[in-house]
Length: 248
View (cartoon, rainbow, N blue to C red):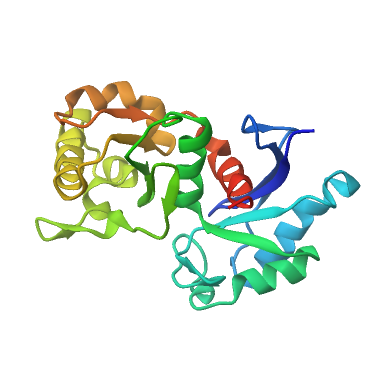
């Protein structure tokens, strides 16, 4: 039987989970989604995670559980908070979530999980060298994966470029907020990705986030030496990637 793990993706608007076939990256059942509690304090979110897991009953009772959080994660402690309550900062999240679901969990930053999903099952599958996966959304998430190995908690959206943090100029939210044309937005992305290219010399860029559905409107405007392609797994990337990470 193929290895299976359960992935839970904690987002700003929803907590989503499903069992994942680790040989293919496919969900083995329709994902369950419930709204992220507001305020999204740790205790309430932990209860929501438990509810998602329990909704699958005995079918997942023996599976390893991986959980994404929109936070930097170090030794099971969440060290930052993006689109989630500030009480997550310096919070013993792995311990609290383990108590909530009744067994050990593996915790991972959400962008790192998306990056692993693309590296193992998606757009970067089989790619040697350094892959940089970015998620363009409310901010800019990022994952570095070298020959299939994750370098965790790399916050490339926080890089200062021309006196600004990259994500306050080039996140997808900014394009909508400032009503930028695709050409104007592409110019900002060009500066961002050209900077990453100069610093890291990657083998491949993968662009995720909801805006990747419109990649034909901005990727052709970018001039880079590094290939840059849209992500494939989209909404299920977090679930799939963190399920895979339970085997690391």
